[in-house]
Amino acid sequence: MKIAKIVTHFAAATFALTAFNSVMAQTHDHGNHAATAVAGQETTMSDGEVKKVDKDTGRLTIKHGPLENLGMPGMTMVFGVKDVSALDALKAGDKIKFVAEKLEGRYVVTQLAVQN
Image 1 (spheres, helix red, strand yellow):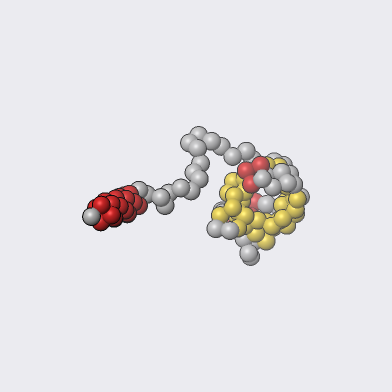
Image 2 (image 1 turned 90 degrees about the vertical axis):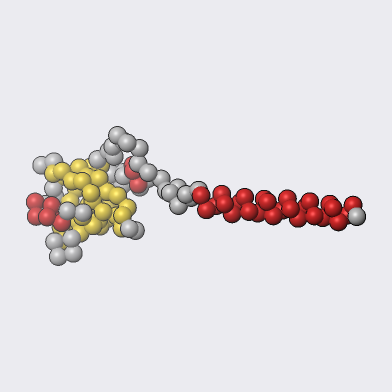
């Protein structure tokens, strides 16, 4: 009789814990754990030199210094450009300040200012 009573209490406790966990899983929003930018935090613009402008593909080849926001050392690489119309004002050899971000798996220039 004692064993049956212990088993019954154990089963009831297990059921209660399982039900509680199910309810908690349904009421907590765990899908919003992605990192977000801090309000007022600005990304520092990096120095670069335009090596090639490709208006047909909307790409820009830049020799750049370190990109702190991406944890990337200086190098020469190809970027997409968020505002393709900005390519009209650029030519190889232009000194620029820019911000690049990784958007949908691609490195994209999101801010750009010519320094010449």
